[in-house]
Length: 219
Ligand SMILES: NC(=O)c1ccc[n+]([C@@H]2O[C@H](COP(=O)([O-])OP(=O)(O)OC[C@H]3O[C@@H](n4cnc5c(N)ncnc54)[C@H](OP(=O)(O)O)[C@@H]3O)[C@@H](O)[C@H]2O)c1
Image 1 (cartoon, rainbow, N blue to C red):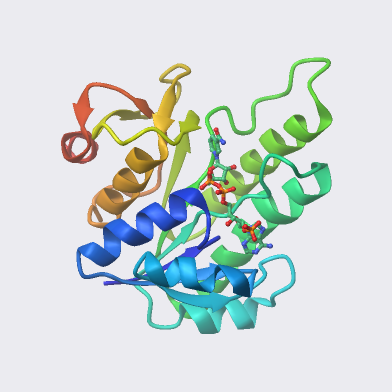
Image 2: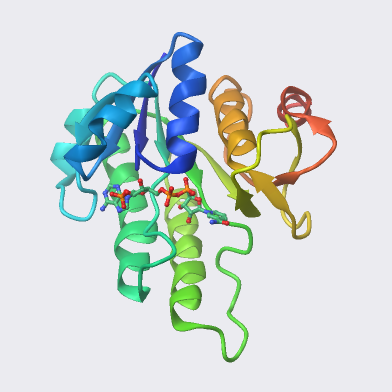
């Protein structure tokens, strides 16, 4: 299998690259900063410099050529303002999906966020409101496409060691934390589960082993 991860130097992306490459998958990580290339290589992936806020669909499609799956793991990040929530969290996902369609890559996993698209409460911080809106719009964009997509909506991410135990189900599973290790493991399992398709899934830490949680989605 050959997988392209957009936002290849992200914390989840590097974990996913390690898991996949350990299992013999060829992984390409799309990064915007060339200084991140060695970290991506150390995770077992091949780095390709591609700034998703400036690349054309043709450029991204060329990087996806021959891949079996694309994973959108990019994000503008906590320090960014409303404008970059739109250019990264929404538009870069749509660009990757455009490129996937063009390159004939049907499998598409999107890391979204629990509560994506929910109308913000009055007084919500502008950047947070823009983030939730951008994630919701990115999800809507993907749902409208003829791709084999899965949207994964983690709760609050932590860098604690993975537990291998999750709750993974259609929204709304309720608020909770989940480790980035476990998000990466769920994504890896979903890449192997072609029967899980066109689903939007909340993900938090829980009591069900990841393989079982994914298998239950096809039962
Ligand atoms: N924090 C939470 O609790 C939480 C909860 C639910 C969902 N999420 C979402 O989960 C996703 C992954 O989380 P994470 O912790 O792994 O994120 P992360 O470590 O911030 O990684 C995001 C990656 O996206 C890259 N990126 C930003 N702009 C880019 C561009 N123009 N072109 C290419 N790459 C670009 C960043 O690269 P640079 O290093 O160059 O900036 C970074 O490597 C994010 O979308 C986040 O919003 C987060």
